[in-house]
Length: 225
Length: 225
DNA sequence: CTACACCGAGAGCACTGCTCTCGAACTGAC
DNA sequence: GTCAGTTCGAGAGCAGTGCTCTCGGTGTAG
Image (cartoon, rainbow over all chains, first blue to last red; front, side, top):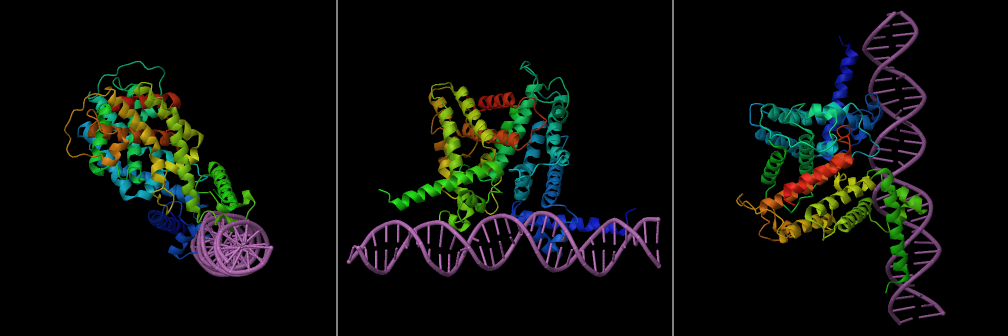
């Protein structure tokens, strides 16, 4: 059982993360100030270093939490009983909705990596959650026989064994080409949301919501859902 | 004719931009320090403010220059005499190649917007250059009759008139749905390159080059090239 | 009860963007 | 050619940052 000290330590760590996330939501990752977090909590800036050895470590924690809440949103939006194309669209919508609700967090996850920062391995499992959801939609569709037969050919595999496990697993109607299309589709989802969020489509669209749905449907068609 | 003072002012401005771009390439936009630029040029930091009113203005200049060199690379890669699908692939390859050669500049253009920074209108024409190239490929294909006939239907237009002008212009075989697919394809190009550059595909691919070509070919098929 | 690990606070360092002021240099009008 | 007016570079200075170190006070394990 945890001692009183460990308990209060966890508690304060949580308060720091919470304050940091608030600040992240307000001013963005680049302007996130460890001193401001300390001020908000009424403690000396140096005290924060007892909990996070550096600003980057605090950011890492926020990144992991961000991937987790985004992944949870995607999982919650997926109804395994629905048809594949609807599942795909629902998950895409959930990701977009989360991105709109947490733009700075989304930018932290999928925007430019921060200066000298290299994502530590801890972030990988959390980052994979959304991919796992989309991969499961693909795999379920394959197992249900809802996917077109692969055309075959195409040379050596482009998708690694690790990625195969995420992208629906092994199945006769899932070949390397189908998985390449799945990776492309996922990249396109990300590109679409980022373009919209980062302002690259300003003035080009009359209705962002309808455009997104139509674009995601095109992608579903592309991967055969 | 420019006076001597104006000439030396332009010259020094150019040196500042050059030094800033060097630093941008090394440490990235977030760590770009105006004082370090001044040090590299052997001048006082306050002197730089005679040329750029703020760090953000210097960044804006770098953004415009970045869009311009990227746009020039895309234009140079486009051979109007080649078949549409080849033109599309060539331009995509050029964009990816530029991104790999200038990762920090690419991140500045297409990654998360910097903190409190809002892209000024000056950047818009430069930013549109790549889109114009891809739009021309689409328009030329339409005028050559190389595009499938539109299926029709789909409700009110999703693409604005401004964007229509960029995306190949008006043509019977280019309807709103085709332009939506074009926007989606361009977003997908960006998403693919960003995923690769920002490390989101690490461990998923055996051959990034071949994957990119295959993915871009799928996109060309999607938009009917 | 005591020795020890832990923790908060404060001072301080090196750095940042940015402002202000003060001479020096250049420029255009007379 | 002189002289006012503009431009420019340099320096000092302010407020802010990440981070380190040291110094007491406090909870904890033996």
